[in-house]
Image 1 (tube, rainbow, N blue to C red):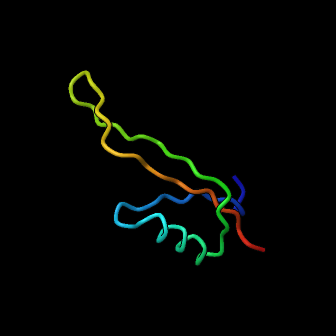
Image 2: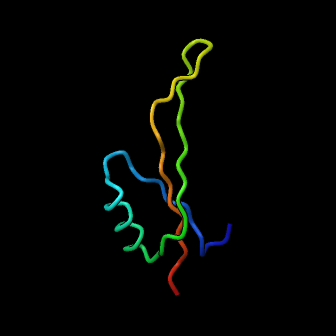
Image 3: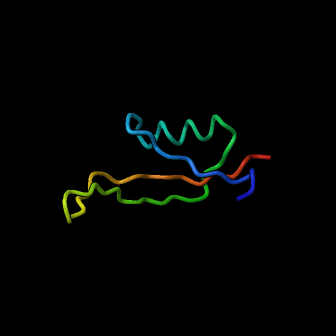
Length: 61
């Protein structure tokens, strides 16, 4: 992936609004979003523990 595009993870202690503000302050514009479930293995089962939110940003010119 080029240096002009980058994926940002939302931290556990920040809201979506704070994450978007952080991305914008770094000089990026959000162009995409994805959510991935995170699992923990307990024995033979996988237990969902949280949803990870990521935003894709493009560097402002």
